[in-house]
Length: 275
Ligand SMILES: C[S@@+](CC[C@H](N)C(=O)[O-])C[C@H]1O[C@@H](n2cnc3c(N)ncnc32)[C@H](O)[C@@H]1O
Image (tube, rainbow, N blue to C red):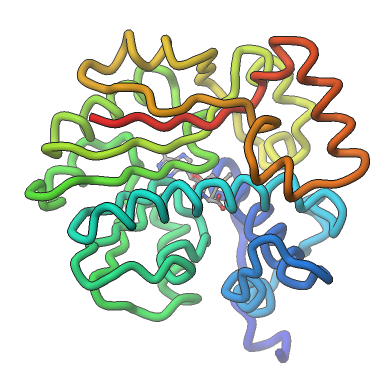
């Protein structure tokens, strides 16, 4: 694509980090055996004018991001298979193409929510789609949720988001979602206290200049803070099927070694709750 026609992107802080996750998915799509095969991500990367090398994501390490997205796609598919009429809140969506990848049915109202600068890019890069809505707001602003219809079950997906929120704001968000809808599920990933403490070794976070805040050490942190939710799963990334099946060689060994130390095993977790 001619450089002049590309969309210039200049983001800092948390919004910048979604460029790294987007690029990881684009590299996966180019791999010999893609895990996710997200051609939307590949096309978006092609249309954005950005120094992608600055993300620190490579064809080798992209798998660390991609297995997470595969995992949340699988959980979302399970929910959608049981609920053909629901609301999906895709929070901190970045430029993830999940609404297009999963292609939900006509009775699913899908909301992609992120900061205004990210949503503007989303509008430029993705077509409009029936029953798909974009919300340009901080997820911690209580106003946007009040506009979402509350007459059906909800699936809240927050991939790569909770750690950017303060604990107070994150808990308030989960409580607000649970109070707003009659029933539903909450799917999100989390870092434990060690993950937050060692954030400076996370190149994507460090280069963006953002700061991680909320440490979630296990399901009890959520159960004690958010009334009405029941745990469905809270697992180490290393125990997820997508990690076991998706990574090879050095990453398998790293996962096994890290799993021997409880704080390292739970450094990054996937959580799922029902209410
Ligand atoms: C690591 S990226 C993940 C993007 C996407 N979920 C993915 O997995 O590719 C983090 C995203 O969370 C968004 N984010 C962080 N804090 C937010 C907030 N308070 N409100 C809305 N979006 C937020 C950022 O703008 C960014 O798009």
